View 1 (cartoon, rainbow, N blue to C red):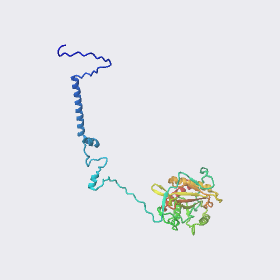
View 2: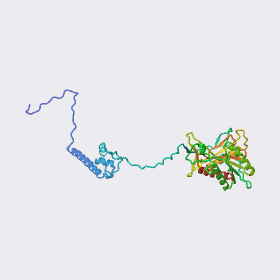
View 3: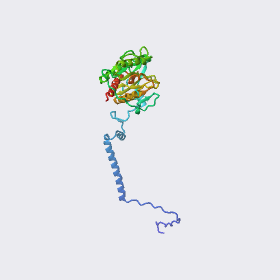
View 4: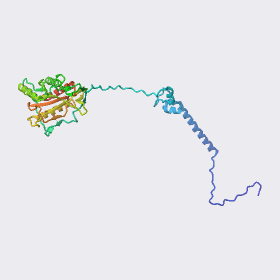
Length: 366
């Protein structure tokens, strides 16, 4: 063997042993290119970061704060107010300030006098019903025949208006004192149905329909016997003025709700409040003789339709009942309730004007 000559190694005898071969290293040119590419990427990243820092005023505040790691200044708007730490609260002895909001003044409801009964306005027109049948008769409104309007004869009035319960009055629309019976009846003719009946007759006459108002107090000395006394007045005036063809007995309703409130049957229209109107038609359901109650019912339904055209929900469903209510004397008779005890006299007077308008239009064939 020569000096410094390596001895020859025998070939591996294990056939399962596979020698591992490492991949060849890249040449010098390839290594230089990779290094240059890496340096270029670093340069671009640094340049872009510098642009962001220079333009921080033009980017969202939350990103600018994140980039600069600075607290927002006092005049910089933020999504939430700055919160003080507990230590700062202990030093200043002040709680964190809350954002001020504009306060809207809410007018407190007026306190009721002690023991007074509140008045509550309510729309009693229903959901489009035109008839409330409380009689023993089945009624099909479409099967009724509307009577032709009658004209005035000579110098006689065509319409007679009276008040069987002439002491029925209205209130201030807010509350009434107890006892309630003393609060919803009055001998003052300017605060009750007498004033409304007088205004209704005047409006009809102004519209070209001659009307007569009877101001006799039929409920004096007591309510008992009112209809008998009213019957005497009707018969006397029909004998004196045979041209009267229509009699209207004017009332106001009286409703006390389950919660103890006095109801005002009201509807708002064109910025004003109106007392709702309830036509009541009597029949012979109690054994009385009322020959023309079907025609009276048809007339009441026609009036209700016209009233609701003038002012939506002004007329409540027409009420058909068994008692005659003196509607068996004149050719055509109606009992009409304008408002309720909770309504004001002004609301009732507004509604009386619309009632006169609707009735006059019918009587004149319009």
